Amino acid sequence: MIKTYTIEGMTCQGCVAKVSYVLKQHASILSVAVVLSNKSATVTMSEELAVDELQNLFGTSSKYTVGAFQPTIEQKSESVFTTYKPLLLIFVFIAATTAIASMNNGKIELMLWMRYFMAGFFIVFSFFKFLNLAGFAESYAMYDVLAKRVQAYGLVYPFLELFLGAAYLTNFEPTITYIATIFLMSFSSIGVIQSVLDKRKIRCACLGAVFNLPMSTITIIENLTMVVMACVMLWKA
Image (cartoon, rainbow, N blue to C red; front, top):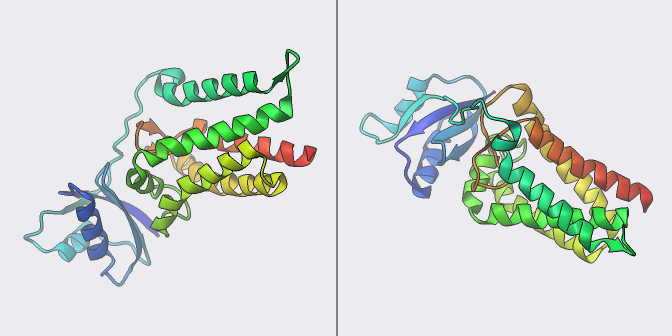
């Protein structure tokens, strides 16, 4: 069973480590993912625990207060473009720039464009994650299947994107690169799809902790687009 609680009183990464350590002392708690940005803790447990029971772990004099989780992201009545403007603009800029780079005799070479686009996508998106690596890992642990259980995976993920970007840019072992992309992005999509289907109003970590983008079908489309492009390139290869 996985449930999210609010943890008021956290101010730094030291607090994150302290809260995580205290919660893990309960025999029914299997793993904990603490997020400083929205002051929450996603707890994987063998049985549902009441708020009071978790609060008792910290003691009556503790500065930390456990409460029922309330989503921090509010979906405003804005257009898709307004909400996802940073993400959409990045896609457009990468697509346009790589289209120019892949032109030959006035025509765009589709396969070359897809390779350059994938390179640009992974390098740029990893860049935003590296701006606040710890913040990304915290946000990613809110919904990714593996990051919920292994917090270190959130710290490793941006490096995987960067390596894939470099592989596409240099055309390193294309077949292996395509297969790695299909596996990574498909696996990453599982948590995204679950969150969207559960209508959880949480932050999407695709651009790290820099932009406060809500999770939605846009994120699913982003991931699956990369999967489809990798499949096409693998088939053509």
